[in-house]
Length: 125
Image (cartoon, rainbow, N blue to C red; front, side, top):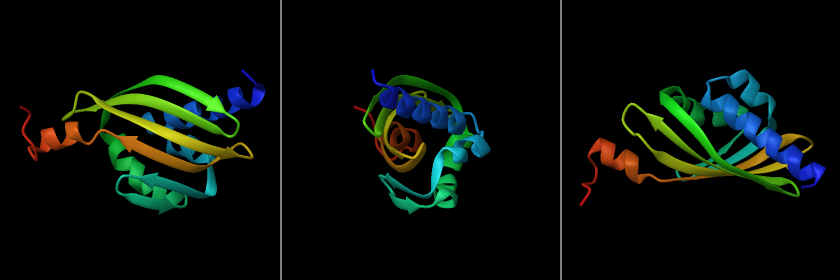
């Protein structure tokens, strides 16, 4: 693994660890000011928008497990599982674009089904 690959993975994991433990000051240190975050609900721009989007979910967590982290060039990909009082397992992945040691773009995907089941929006068969 190259130094660049190691570095982008370290930045991604540090950001993930910070937001999943509620340490938003540390999390924001890893974000570029003009961060773009693409999520299933839409695109956010800027640290404040990303924090407003992520914080309610992060505050609800009872557990977060990092499953994998990979890096190449200026990108890192992590896969993780989270839990809260309503959902025992909610897998997700995030792709980070990193420039000048800061995350400039995040693309988030996650399984919405556990949340829909918990709300009673759908019924498991």
